[in-house]
Amino acid sequence: MQNTTTRATIYLDSAMHKALRLKAAETHRSISEIVSDAVREALREDEEDFAAFEERAHEKSITYEALLKKLKADGTL
Image (cartoon, rainbow, N blue to C red; front, side, top):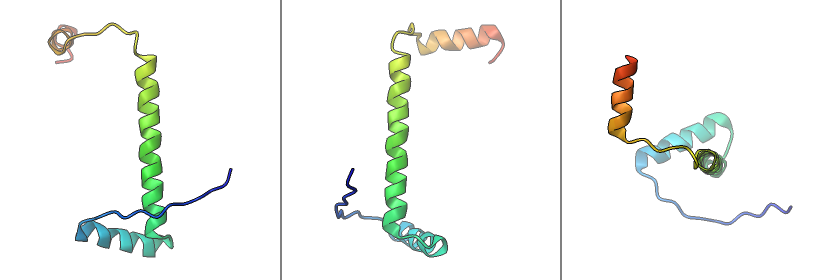
């Protein structure tokens, strides 16, 4: 699979941009690499969340109130 990149513009507040510049310098990586890795990790987390939702789709629902009562009865609260 060919690895292609697309240029994108993002806007960061000044403090975050400074932190990214410093991290890039310390780690000998580009800001682009750091941002790409962070986005990739966020997308992986989303994928894991969707898989977990799918696995639990058939579980019986419980209301928040019922959950609190159960936790109190179990001595958790």
